[in-house]
Length: 441
Ligand SMILES: Cc1ncc(COP(=O)(O)O)c(C=O)c1O
Ligand SMILES: N[C@@H](CCCC[NH3+])C(=O)O
Image (cartoon, rainbow, N blue to C red; front, top):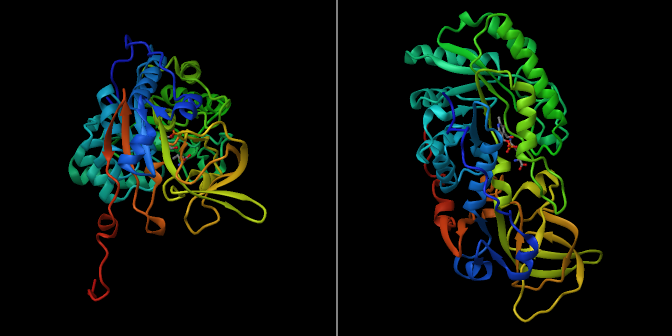
């Protein structure tokens, strides 16, 4: 059985507020930790996460799913930090992985192999080998070629692999085009027609037990309408398969639940999300899996950065931070909005508001966190917090412009723990070779 932890009878979600940005602006404190003091010790840019908030989200989702035979497979790509994974493993979470690297992360964090599902449109033979060797619970297959590969690797290893067909339900997820995955023109999954043919000739792959369906229509879903539509198509298809005598042990509805990036934005609740699943699949007697990433971690994290300088251009006023697009790519990649909160500075009273282009030091015009953002006037050396950065922040960070990866810390009840050291320059440069080392392949 993949991904679990008891759902029925799990403790109710604790009523713990998520990050309060007004309080942050007033006191500069997150989970009892003074961020100015933290930055003085650990430096900036710095990812700061609240484990309590992640735990609260996990429990809230588990609670919302109560009554369904449902498992949560956390999407490791959202934030693969070992401490985050360990925390979720301790809560009973499984994992949704998309690479051999994520497999290692999940296993090292103590997530049981049988609670891991392996998704992704292009798994290499080596990755399939490693996943089978580890005993992952299920492969989510996205093409016939992949099904053939799984068959041959499983045969060679003398094992039977469990697999789901990822269907592409062709719905518009009403999210950013670059993170929409459930339209026919997207590279993900196969049509219901193709999946039907796989099930109809399942005996062609005797070392693959094809007994599951999977979908994932996109990320940062702020409307559940597309989910309703996709779930309905999935449910219809599942009924047809069962009526045709196919075995169906698992339906995995993917992730995608959106979060509030902007004060006042409306995002669906865990209860609404679970109600959509219950409505479409309440009848299903097998296992239901969900693969949330962002929803569990985004709002539990912030990126702490220091203002390097203020710069008045001919037409725009810039606030130059020591964080950049290599640390948090979302604004550059998707024009994503993140609330930005300047932290209080000793002795300075209320500041006039200024329209800033908030930028990083990287040599790209796209290295912009916000454009014409109304913020209280800031000064060099002041700290700012870029909110809701717990998902797809550190996990998408790079060394672009030869900038070392930032550190990551947990904060809780006035204390902090470094969960990833800042990368040193030596670590960043390790592995590069002199061109003197020529050889033949
Ligand atoms: C297959 C799959 N599952 C789960 C997720 C997690 O998505 P999210 O972080 O939006 O919940 C993704 C990423 O979008 C994905 O590709
Ligand atoms: N990286 C994206 C989400 C992609 C989800 C992966 N399928 C983001 O930051 O919003």
